[in-house]
Image (cartoon, rainbow, N blue to C red; front, top):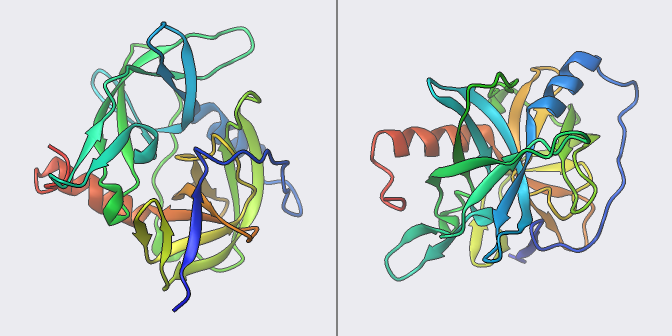
Length: 247
């Protein structure tokens, strides 16, 4: 079987323009998705901030909020010891508003082993501020052709709202990148570009997150995403201390 080569959107250098579905969705869900989406930054040795990826607030806790992004934005696989190793550089979350460039320190509390296809990361931000969140949906209810929206942050351009459709609900063949091998990925007709990795895709029907963008297929207009059902399995395994690939 011919292997499909996937390019990480963290490393892609092609910028993109929005694709809009027919008829704009209710502005409330679009505005909520935009407001819950932040840019993930990595602090450099000199103290500067480099954009890493996109992240979405999905849960409020007792001390602050949890954000979901992609593991390849914050960690690398240690293939010798079979575990995900988080970068030692500090990470920050910013909503990057025109009049507010506040950076909030973010701690990586979960990182998936990419060799298994668990390209997920969860970051915790302690704050007393009130921020909007996007709920997690059900990937099993997604239909081919379903309309979706995505908020992502192409490098240097800030958060943007994009619209598209689900082009394939369940991809039953290998999708490979950097020795990652995914099956059951979801393909989307949503433009992807640098900085889109880790961003959430929201079903307009469910008004909830159904998958997370992780890369693009070389020579194909589709972007590759991992269904929310796999993220839930990963998160629950880490919480139960049964995920041996993350200490």
